[in-house]
Image 1 (cartoon, helix red, strand yellow):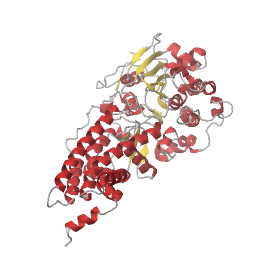
Image 2 (cartoon, rainbow, N blue to C red; image 1 turned 90 degrees about the vertical axis):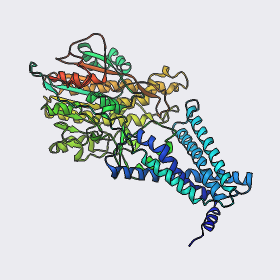
Image 3 (tube, rainbow, N blue to C red; image 1 turned 60 degrees about the vertical axis):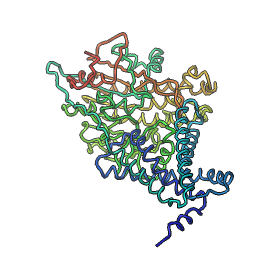
Image 4 (tube, rainbow, N blue to C red; image 1 turned 180 degrees about the horizontal axis):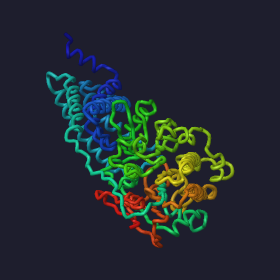
Length: 590
């Protein structure tokens, strides 16, 4: 049998950094399961389906915490080794000393790593913003260090010192109890009855309806183009229809939660959608991917990105399975309306949602910079009989319109502006190309059937262009750190040109209808100067747009207030239906 005293002595004689890293694994798992795991599960809105997914999830998190603990304690262990040499020469009991004090090392090194990641991402640190975080971490470290010092003194003063294995087993027990805690008492998400649409028998046959979701559209950008005549199609619709302002909910106004509410008429607590991206992995529950940086989770986010790069998890747009509730096109489809939907969120897998679906798991857009990969495969569209036709605009790797970029930004391609972390020029290329392909496939659907009863089209490029070009179009929003005058003159007109391009493509699409359609245009939020630490200087604001026009829409000279929850009832009314009484919104055309 081995001698525990000799084993402890051999363990204590290890290299200090290795010794700290070994203890860091246990401390990483213990602290991670109690402190980080609940944050990760909550921030990623993870809802495991059954015990097997819980086991896979918790095992994966424990493995990540072990790796992070070993890494940060290995780096931080250098400081602990220097402290040992400077103050004591050698700890009286090195195994216990390193085992106990590694806890504080892990916390401090983890926090420092989070700060470094934040600085690398945004080139700034707002210490006033993080004051509460620093106070919490500092207090925790002081308490933890005080407890560890008291334990260390108690151990070293005993004639018969307990083996350090006791500490190891204690940390393992803490980790095990922390792993179980998220499972116990997990609240069930609120449920909401999903009603159906009831046909209004008194209605005459309704005109076709074109529903366009324009991500990030704001009247501040559109009004100037309308007034100056560079958006004649929008001006005509405004002059004969109803306009409104949509108040975006839930700052910082992420699009995923907004579109889920707009498309279902239900709040995010019911739809279950909070973020813009999802992640899937073998054996894991579908999780949502928060895009906001969090000092507490920055190192975990880095590991998550590495796992995605290695193909162990996959970032995707939120699949239909995440959305609790039926989007409006599915309600209409189930009510026997001939429906088609193009690149809206929550359209994969496409089966059963509409007559024609071109899902958002198709096409290359700005999400590729975050690791989202899409391929033009037949399973991304329905019906499969039209797959060749529907996928055609997305198959070529070359720009779908080689002249579009030069129309939006004439002349030689300028370098990346000095005030921008990311390159707005590249963002313009990506946004304009995916929007152009979206318009093309939408036109193909209408050329095939000019009487298409309901067509929903999602245009996401304007949001990307506003994010990237806002400071050059509205330099007055940035009295501090204003863009260079040359960039304002060169890049400022791009946003207005993009609105003109949108207007032209909208006109082309409307011209394909055999009869004048009703049209509803809505955005999920507005845009303005950023007040957050982000990669772009343009950011979401609360003032989105609403525009409805057509044979069934009355003209209102004044803008009205419209909520997310009014869109589904309005569309239902325009298609001759009464919406479910379970929805809180109302039709704005009644």
